[in-house]
Image (cartoon, rainbow over all chains, first blue to last red; front, side, top):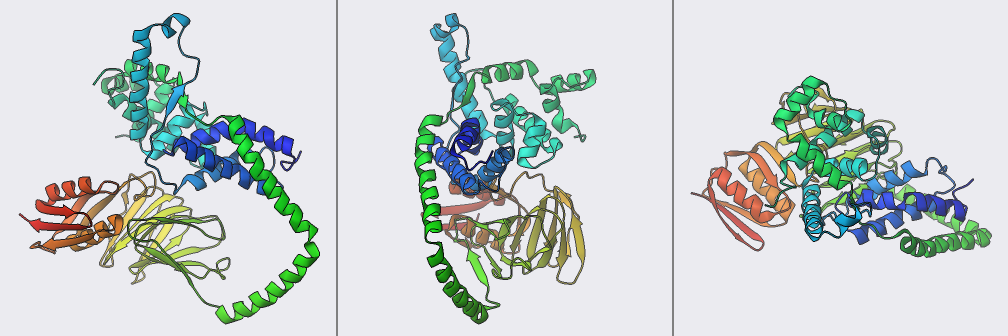
Length: 167
Length: 305
């Protein structure tokens, strides 16, 4: 099963492209730029398809994404959207609730932006990509303790922001 | 703070707190609200471009890559001739240029990321430069640095950075060097590095360690508390930097011209320089140093009150 076969490559793309986009955006890179950089990662993976195994593809992609986004101009905001899993039907029709959630979304976006990059990346990977601390440690090539510290910092920052109430 | 206090919230999130730890956290944080925030956060994700849309664009790029490959194999014989000619040319050029060095410089206000042939990455801070022997890089990983840079070193043989004030030998992977005038600072982020001054004294830094070298004298090793290259984090922390050097730093990061009027040049500054907001940076410096300032496009004048 070589990555150089288009259908295998496409399956890797389907499995990872959204994660890589979010991983890059967690570095405050705008959605469109993140999509371009994600493409660049996959083009490079394609060029090296004979050197990378199917199992090694994801760590290769994350490593590329990390390197590629290192010096990318970043002054954007992390943009969030609803997962679609939100709330019950009655809540979806409740205007007051929707407004509150909209305000919550905006305050959370701001809070995520305010985190240090290291904490933001760990927070997004753990909370929005459901990676375990161990998986994050492996992808970022740091110790689990460092992941825990970064996550602690992220949560500390969140708790200090006035996210639940109106300012 | 005890060693494990800085991971308590992570443990809380995983339900791994002891009763005692939980009490301690509850005193400091409103855990109920935090839990509610995290519960609501689950309904949100980062916006991305749809997979289909991205694949369509990517697919055409991949086809192009493949075509290039096919063309290459189709005219392989021709290529061999071209390669031979190039090889002879390159050998001649190598003989002529052996020992020549490559310099990469970042302009003021800009940073440059350079990928070395071995995969090491060097992030050159504004107004700084590195020089190395590109051809001999695989045998001799040695760099001369002027200014400031962050190094993410690939595993391999020795990796040495010489600056005007000292020599840093890499025993591990990630570190940053800053120097200005007779001051130098080395911060280690991963692995360990050895820092030597010009008189041959040497100190070893481990993860999170930093050391200052002032007029060839070492400070004690201290914890730098940074998670990434300082200039990438948007602020620089200085300990007792001379004000003239501070002005040079401002010029380097913001590409402006700075004048100090009626200011005692023997004074030093300890504190933070914000790197992404000139007005904020200037405002902060003027308050800390009790200076007045006049900022006008590319010119900044500080004067003593």
